[in-house]
Image (cartoon, rainbow, N blue to C red; front, side, top):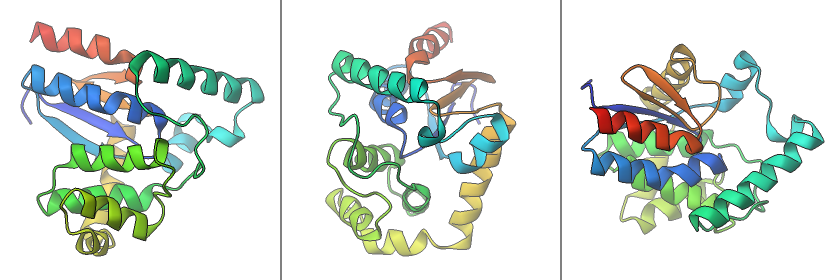
Length: 200
């Protein structure tokens, strides 16, 4: 892995991953950095790092999360339903679809963004196989083939490996970015990541 590479741990069901996704890709292009897309399983990470799923958090934390989402949506001008129809939603199949697509030559950044937008802007159920096939097809990919490959052992093993790697680097939430061994948690830390890229 080159010194300019960025490890990107994220969840396709995370609104904050969605809010930062395009900006990360723009930074990578601007500074000629390579992004390693690593969707990880937060249902594994949270219990091991003191985190809680949204619906298990205190009412105060849940209310503030919605406030922050509204603020960031308006500030960034990103289409975002604060409380989408299909949330909470399991994103394991979607994550494996991205990994399967990448193994087959698909660009993971664009595929991931399309899935996140489907969840957070278009009221689609990203846990549904048919919805994921349609999203892949809309990008000119072979959706049915990708979703079949998402059930392969190699893809499942890669997803488990990503999740363990997230824990190994100290990630406890998403999105998390690692650049030159340093962890940046949250899309609101992209400015700090950019400063690090500028120094390289």
